[in-house]
Length: 146
Length: 249
Ligand code: SF4
Image 1 (cartoon, protein in one colour):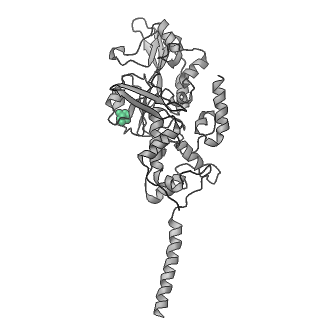
Image 2 (cartoon, each protein chain N blue to C red; image 1 turned 45 degrees about the horizontal axis):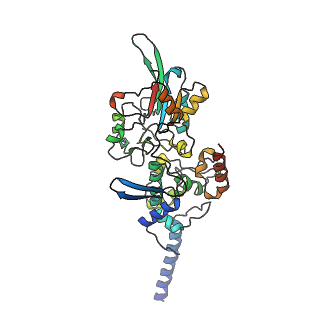
Image 3 (cartoon, each protein chain N blue to C red; image 1 turned 90 degrees about the vertical axis):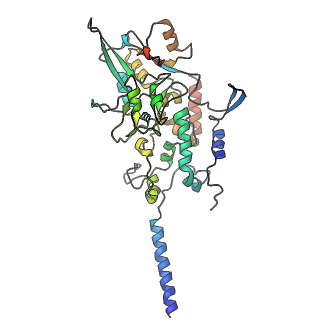
């Protein structure tokens, strides 16, 4: 009888623990766009190194045609607020903050970088993903004919 | 879950470079000081070492009541100057007055993009640097906001951003605690526009007081103008070899 009681307690404890665990683990917002070919785990662990590498290429060498750009990140990973507009880094729901708040790691990116997706005008053609190959081609042909 | 390789190795970075093509630059050393370089296919590195971007400003064509270039720069990069001494100012109109005759002349002054930039010499972190194509920039990722470069600059061309800001232009990130200044619209040049916001605005006014171009290319408008009319550098005595030249001052 005593044993059964303890077993019940343990089971109950586990159940509570699991519910608790499920509720504190950050709920990572789903992204739009094509998934990372390297897989999410890879990006979760290496995103800062990938970005740091490309940022130096862009700032120092002027190479803007990089694989990773912050503007690209914030575009696919935008989280819409109740008004249907993407929320800024100020919001707790912001993609990066969901995990960064959880592990208490501060990020400085958005002190300088805009945290919402750039407007898709002609000025930001370079931020467009590979899916718009057709438009990129058109722009290229247009450039040639100048 | 399949996690093949979670470590970012040197080889991985290399693979990414090669895939990009743009950064794939093979250098073979033939003899000390002699190298053979081969560019990968695809987009060449945007900051081309063969280019020296420059500006030629004709003060004689620049009326005192026009500040289109200043407004254009402010709009393009999102900085705002409300007249406070701490407000950022990437470009400003300066008035010169001949004390003897009272003749007044105005001209825009911005970062002069020196060949030998004092701001780069003094920067303790390497944040202030010169690109291969002669543009002098601040890498805000490494800027610690010490403002040595502001002290070193003979042209007062750099500003310190003292306030938190939001809603930056995506192509011109800027933030509190770092130093900033004219970047010759690198985002436009890297995109292939071949001009800057201030020069476009000056053209639009019809005054045509500014010419932008590659000073290394003898066929460019700026090189031709420099070769046919007298021009000066500000503080030529410092021997900095500036990327911005003036006429009629
Ligand atoms: S303020 Fe920034 S860019 Fe200027 S010298 Fe200091 S670290 Fe370098």
